[in-house]
Image 1 (tube, rainbow, N blue to C red):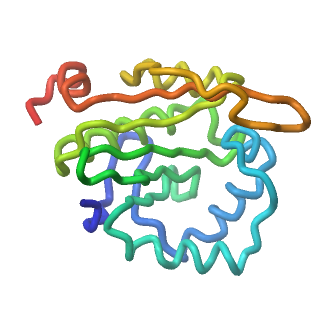
Image 2: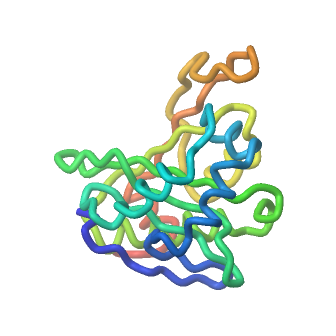
Length: 184
């Protein structure tokens, strides 16, 4: 379903298939402690393992891994994964490269571009995500784009000795069509 790896252009960002040419920016992304907290990613990442991981992203038809570029720099990544082809659903995951990318609208535009692609170029019906309750900035963006809160996973993340809930959200094709005015 995601065999085609498109390049999607917006006003501020361009989403393009992840490749090894983006490795330095992606290493910066996964090495940022705040990005780790916001995504619930524990541990450190070895550059060799990241190189091997990112080198194979284009080979997977069951996921779409795109790098978010702004002004010629990697500012994040956005992914559609956990594809359930029978039920036409998948998960969305996004991460921005820390403070230099926060608050500039990059994430909002990246998500809108990816939703437009998913709901017009594929048969996907439902896109879900999880966001930790302490990430109010992301929750606000997701709601603004049209994601609806569905439920809460209690104590889903243990971070620095403290438990945090995760809010489950989704957007459906008809909701996106209504909001965007698209007939796709």
